[in-house]
Every structure is written in C-alpha cells, then in structure tokens.
Image 1 (cartoon, rainbow, N blue to C red):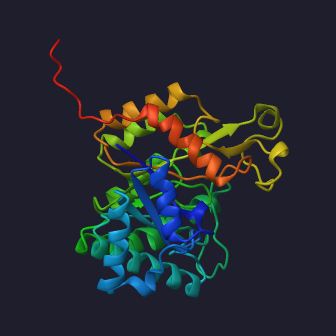
Image 2: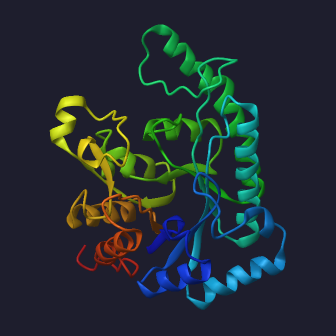
Length: 322
C-alpha cells in the first residue's frame, strides 16, 4: 500500500513546492484536485486537458520525486436541482474522467451528489427518515428519477475511458453509507465504487472494519481516504451527532475531523490497514487533512508517521506454517 495525500491543504504553495515537501516526509502518492469544492490550485483541469506538453511536465515532476498519481478529485453535486449548477458539476466530473484517462491516473474521486426532494425544488434535500410518508416518496424520486439515470450514463462514460469512479460516502449526499454505495453500484456498473473515507462513518456509528469487509466482498473499494474523526461524548450525549455547529466551534461540536491517530489509536489504524489487505485493496491511503486543531503540515506529518507504522511494505509471504 502507498501512503498518499490529497494536496488541497497545500494549495497555497506551488505544485513544485508541495510535491517536494511530500516527497521529503515519506509520501508515495498524490491525489490532485481538479475542480469542485476541492478547487484546482495545483492542476488547472481545463488548461491541461488534451495538452500533451503540460501533462508530460506534470508526469516529469511526479517522476522526479518518485510519486505516483492515485486519483484526480472533483467533489461537487452533479445532480443538484439547480440545472446550471448540476451542469457545471457534470462537466467537471466528465472532464476529470477524460483527464485521468490521459494521465493514466485510473481513478476519479467525487461525491454522489444530492437532488431536491421533488421536481421544481431549488435546494438539495437529504432524507434521513421514511416518515412522514412524503419523505419516503422524495427518496424514491431522488433515486429512481434522478440519481440512477444520471449515474448509469456517467458510469458508461467512465467505462469508455477505463476509469474507476470512487464516490465518497458523505452525509448531505445521496450516498452516505455502505448499503447506499452498493445500491448505486448495482444499479450502474462496476466502474462505480467507493472512495472509502472512514471519517464520515465514525460519527454515524458505523463499524469501519465491518464496512470495509462489506464493500470489499463486492470489490467495491476503488480508493481510500485516510482521515480520522473523534466523537466528543460530552456534547453527543446531549444533542446527538447530527451537529450543525460550525466546524470552527470546536468545543461545542459533537464530533470533529481529526488527524490520523487523534480520533482512533494506532492499533485501530493497523486493523483498518489489515482489513483492507484482507479484501484485496492495495492502493493508496490518501490522507485528507481537515483537522482544525492543528496546521496542515503538522497534521500531514503526524498522519504519515502513524500510517508509516501501519502499512505493509511487502507482499504477503507464503503461509509456510499452514
């Protein structure tokens, strides 16, 4: 497995400086943002698409530092009820798939998106319960009339370019947990799978290693985000975990995104890595730093330190004792 980094936290630096820094702290792979909420500080998707010279320059930079490209990232909402916003997100995603093909990245990470609750809505609607019954009807509309038709077409586009689309299971998106992830995959094709980010599963009360096994049984993990979360029970016991406090109101929140090792200990992360190997995942563990209690560089360095002791550097040996 490779230790990777989504380079967004280093967006204030040039790509040359960011890559040199990551090489220096022991990173093996990078995930580069090319649109949507992650932005495109390091790679201008439109400028580099179909530009052989610019793509060669990027490859040379990565090769110079012995880093591989694990994925391109464009997290947005391609099924937004606002047609203009949906069209922009769809264009970003399709172009990211085309660029990933040209760069040999193999994978694009993204969100499933979230529709409105009915035709004519202007705001996405995250349905979390089947009652009152109009909520169940809204959920059927979101899946049957919007998401499945869109993602079937997008999955064909991805298959044409030989690219896996790795969807991050994220609350306030239609796909936010493993059974929904599998349902979308089964309704489309095997190009659709998970960008398995445990940080959003921890606070939902999902057992991360069991979720890895569940999706791994279907070969449905295309990429992995190494990101931790800590649930702060003193707040969660009072108001639960559906927390709308700002992420910067750290002391008042029920949970926070944390650097690797600050939500769950090293032994847990070793279990995560071992379970990934059990289900056949040998790709990047792409660190996504969103810990507001520390700086980007310190958070990345601490995560690399923990994962460096958790990942396996070699292939499994023969079970000579069996």
